[in-house]
Length: 218
Length: 218
Image (cartoon, rainbow over all chains, first blue to last red; front, side, top):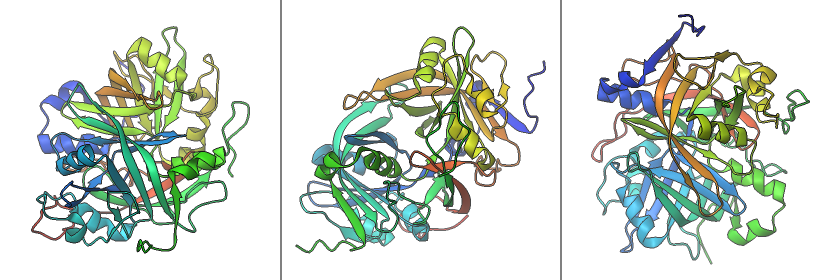
């Protein structure tokens, strides 16, 4: 059997996952999607308790109108986040710089409903007029979303939540003339897996790709 | 009105998006989820045409059993990818190093079904025994998935596709003893928005966060 695969790759099959040490499997699988964004999700309960929780599965769903999705694990500390979104219909996404790596990670601790992760991790609460969910004052980018719909993955009960962008706050100086936002210049925090945090540098941008043209930097 | 917001942030409201220049809005909104992974999705049609397309919305759905999700835009070049997944039930995700930034971007061009983006962008086709979809030989990480289920976002018809991991190939030397994979050490490619590519460096890892303990590096 000559599968011609580069010999320096480790190969796991479906059967290997079954007998695998649970912690090893969790780290391994969580590392596999690639470099992930770090979004701090701000919500508030109907009775006024502010909540902030770290998420790394926020994704683009559409630009017009602007929709974002995110994944909420059924067994995670995010239950406050999901409860608040269900009751109040809104939430914020906040991206911070690498200076806040440890503070961002600390929001993943299982605080009680009455404890605010804003205060515990040292972030400033800020509000936009007419929007119920709190924002992170120290953010590079903050996004205020209204709940739109959700889907429960049949395979494992995980939630995919879709929201519509109502507010967008972006650090001045990062927005290019064509609308591109240079998050790397803002030193935005990213991550790998469950607990590893990264800094990012821009290599370059490429023009819209066409079949009959070689890649062209812009 | 004193909203106490940092004055150097630009604020867009829902109404601002409506009248916005379309290209500006597309760049702006696509930049907003944060740093994104770059996954090259390998598929093959029933009649044997190989396809490779760049995606930046792959996300973790579960580790046991291991499920990943990805977003397929209804109006994108990804129609070959989705057609092939529907017909054959499998696909691969492949992450490459920053050396392949321009080649990865080139796979977004609208090639015909008969043209292979592997050949056009200069990637090596490789196969795993018993798995129909092709892999990228130059990858740092390759993942073979079986289609599990999909969801169509009501708001804008976008597809969320869930797959179960059948094969995992990871460059040796990047896998830590605890299962963590240091993709930054492998110089894995990441991106911002539609056309900007990034390199990443690890800052550090943190221990499991607890409410009564300060953040601790590991």
